[in-house]
Image (cartoon, rainbow, N blue to C red; front, side, top):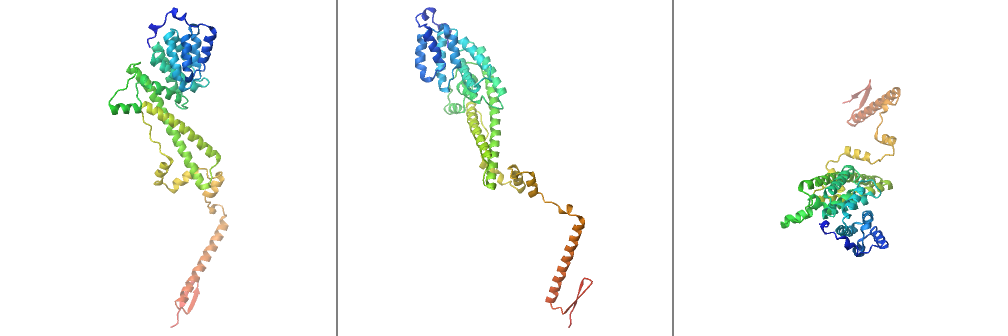
Length: 375
């Protein structure tokens, strides 16, 4: 917006209302602005002389607890203020610099999402006139988030919102849907050229690095959830019930997985990148059926905590060698008795067989059987 050359003269502001009461009330309304109050706020802004209250106005807008549906109202008001007051733009940039320098503040996720989108759109629309300083602030903020948030992903919603509303203009990247539409109809969608291609690539590379970390985290969480569901299913089949603790853990993982999946899918679509296929529990079980073996089953059962403790596990799984426990003297006597009994059974079996075939006399000498048959 080329507002600098069209700022009204000082005589214009003399025709406006400069009362402290009305100006103070307007600043108070800005602190809780919503989309539904846009019409009234615009009317008040046009009728008031806010020259002495611009700093309070900027602080009220940047500090307002805005929702995403209220952002267009805030941007519209910033545009009107920029056209009318020459010191609005530098004050807005300075306030955003202070706000975005602290990523550990209270309500940091919500605040950064609002401030990051506001900064991006103020740069794209030209409301922040010091483009070099503004884009340096934007780059430093994104760089700090990417390098400090790869594990927790606390600022993922803020990054998704930024890419959704500023990605095409600042990074020069079209969403998957937009790219497919351009290819299908052989058209080119218009964009605001606020940066040269080499500068756009810097921002694009930052967001690609962050999206890679998001995908890695999604795959890890998915595997963890599948393992938990698989264990619970086996416990249910073998014991008939699953403990409340394991159920709560599974539900917590499932909620985290769903939330991360939504944000990761949205970010990937906006950056036109692909998320790898994540197999379901049924697919994993089908893949394991062909390579299932007793050894694998035993290993998996060990992971499900079927045994109350190690002593119970040892009692049922380890077979003791009694020869190492029973005294040798007792073991030898028992062994001799068993061998003698076996020989007696063999003799009796042999005698029964001989009588059966017609032997008339059987003589036993020195443990040998002699058969006498009279003709």
